[in-house]
Length: 163
Image (cartoon, rainbow, N blue to C red; front, side, top):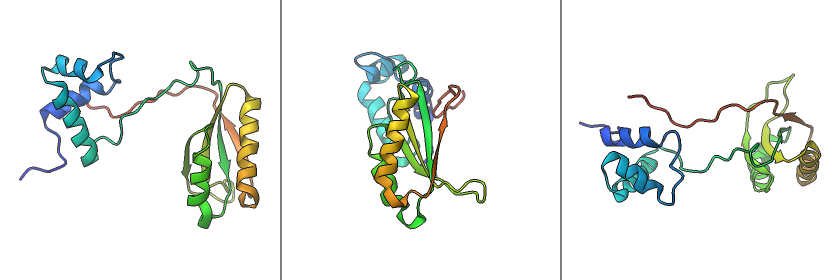
């Protein structure tokens, strides 16, 4: 019996062909299909099936914030009531300046923060303005916060499989 979530050799080839990113062409799936000797419809159907099975979580753009001029990137961390974190996180995550927002465990007594929100700005002043905006949005739920600025770029990568 074959595991329903297992990937076959064609899936592996598609993953290997896309793991460094889709080709920057008007028809990226056609380019991958041509490389693998498949049709674009097959490539797209297999990617969709792998998404449905959870083999691939998502297909999306990963912008390089520095190249776009966003050089002041700050991870804002917030101490908010645990019982309200889902609702507060949804509100903070919906802000344009926040690229991702998530719940993390506290590590008391040194680390009281449980809500993380990445804020991108062209300057630290812009990040500080957005941080003040989040503080205002959180209101009395904000029991403390800090901003941790990026000091270097870490390489972002997705799924990687070998031969």
